[in-house]
Image 1 (cartoon, one colour):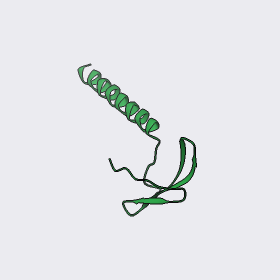
Image 2 (cartoon, one colour):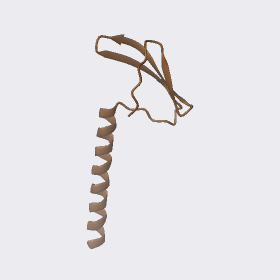
Image 3 (tube, one colour):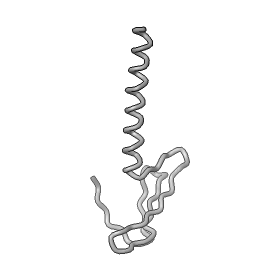
Length: 72
């Protein structure tokens, strides 16, 4: 993991096309602005984890239905 220090209005660039800027700092909370191409999905980690879990569950359900169909 890369750890960087940034102040308000300072930014960092990822992969030449994603910019993350510190917009505001209030106590323990930091507000970030993210500029990325539309085709690059950006999620909060807790949402991303839920999406991945749902996708795994759907794959398992689809696989079981496919096996039931094959076995009659």
